[in-house]
Image 1 (tube, rainbow, N blue to C red):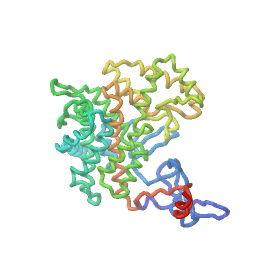
Image 2: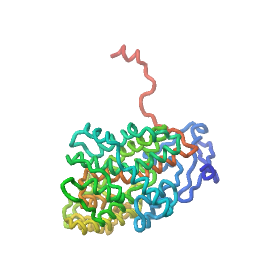
Image 3: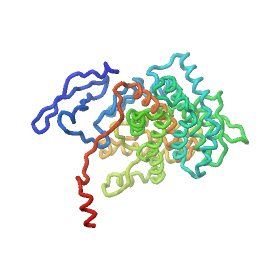
Image 4: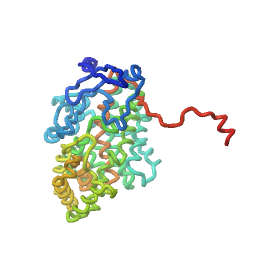
Length: 434
């Protein structure tokens, strides 16, 4: 990684008539970056970039987004190809190791994941400490973090073997943990994983089977879930991935880092956006009301906003949204679900595409616009939407964390600030006056 970080050219920053030169770094795609690591030492200044909209926090080889063109690549492979031809565990391998697995490597990886899906039996009693009406994400934040108390043999981040073991365990056990969170909040007994099922089928069975009847996984739903997991596996340096990296920069164990990612993902502006989009579609109710809501969305004095439209990075149509739309249609057909809200979604997308207001502002459907509809049709309640997202994104989080640990230039994250509070005040004088 040191060679890829070599400077190619310089950039000059002029401040109050004084010029300062900084190295320029060029990636294999995307804009070049100015290395301002020595800005404070040279000019006595910090940069100010709330939300890090123009700041590269790391070097990464994992995921690339071209937001203007609507391109998403995992290790160079288009998301469309991975969804069409691969499966989720193949995608996990790709994200972790940088290359598609051979047949033998795939078999070995699948075997290792499959035989780590069980969680420590004592964790079942750990769940009993939560209220039955707890949000599944609240249960997951606690449960994932608690894994570091159960798996001491994979918390030493300096040991490559332990890092690999922790990575496999996180990918393998997250479906079990998510399904247990769902079962606990519904008052149903936990369902143990089965080694003869594939990853997605195993998760669906652990969520929806009950002891008193045989559960057969619908292959259409299993394939749909597998593709949903691929679509959510990684999305470059999003808020939760950056949180995992920041937590990991302190040397925290991997389970704590992933728990931090789960907590960040819980936010309605991140993983909870699909639930908000579903609520919006239900509020609109029928296609005839779409013009009314589009007018409200354009009214600056109206708090209504189109949920599931627009993205911080994608400034054209999110490639994942197209794929999720097709998956949603397949799931609705297979489950014979009420598709009225899907009709509303399709018409809303088309109406917004015909409206210059939304196209000029580059407000197009994103992944969340159709994912809530899809998960609901599969039987998941809205509270579980983000938990499914967390299950999928664990693959990306682990890949990002692993890459960060191996980066020789890694140091503990320490953002600066623009301080606008009081300057030094006299405590004794103030106490005297009050």
